[in-house]
Length: 479
Image (cartoon, rainbow, N blue to C red; front, side, top):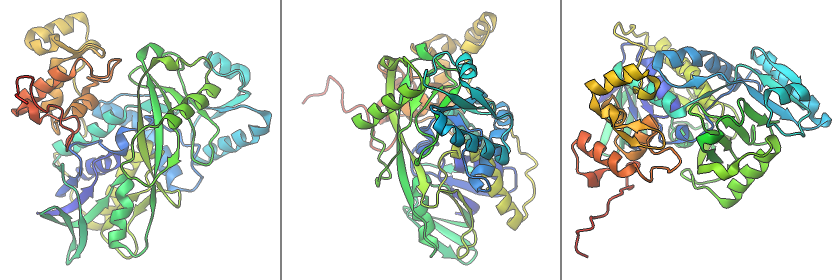
């Protein structure tokens, strides 16, 4: 199979690159080792649109953070995913640390972050009544925001798909070889021939880079553990609350989510295992202790789930984007750690620009940059909802009681472009199973709908693809 561009990885970076490339008449494909988009680093992060004051001035990280932040609002309207500018606060707990806050402010101004202000204690308390009494001052960034990481990634991928980019799942790249006119990308028994390779493989980006270049890079998986609180806590804070950054980044935050929960975390622990997404008692205890310094009386008894994600930390602490000098046609998107989610739209634009500059392709005259997300009946008026249910009765059947998700929404999630194939796929698209009971009640019915719509036996429905089967037998089977 011959392509102009092969993208390795269907996370937020790979999907952003794919969408930008679909603006051109190019034959492009995305290869993803998991069963769905947004199955790696992109699915387990803070969901923050960082303002851009943290990264060192003059770095790609700083430049693309600010550009991505500025793109996010318009992109959310074009692709119909949740995003809100709620603003962020970086807390300072002592007069001795005030110079660090000032340094952060000056860096943000230099990076082009608009509206930054240093607030005194009284102003911070007025904005956030539950903030710690220890706070002396804070850096306020009104351009900070919150976004649904699933919503953003899936929207980018769906739009790329409808504009002609091909997606191959359960397709693990095992080798990359030079060819006369580009590269051969090997995945199992299949060889993809391509003029360009885009390496958007997250914590595995160093593996693929080092296959083709003598100039080696090294990525350390940096594990971050989180706690998610019930929606009853959704108004406990209204801004994203950071502490002054330390050696390993921005530290433990407390933030509302776009869906009305409260998110607390992450920790930052360097590990060796590139699939090490287990939570630990020590990590979750650290989350609780550090969050308590920012916000008083945080209702941690309302935790409904905990999870861990991995950041792709490259030894140089900077985004690596572009061709290695000894591997033309191979484009890295490596070391895309925080603020990678925020930067993704700008990274996609940058990488597509590099490729377009070399190939000089025609514009895609059929490109449609808009996409409509899954219909949410709860957002309709009573009259509109009644009319919808009359026309499509499935929207009147509640499957997930915690999140009030209907059968109609789940059907849409399964049957739309790049539709869900597993329970986690449905969860990321609709939130069915993300509520207080964490899918305890809705899983069987959701599995029935997936099996029916995909025309497969229910035994083949998995939690998240691969070996994550759920049904081992029936209660009528003989032992």
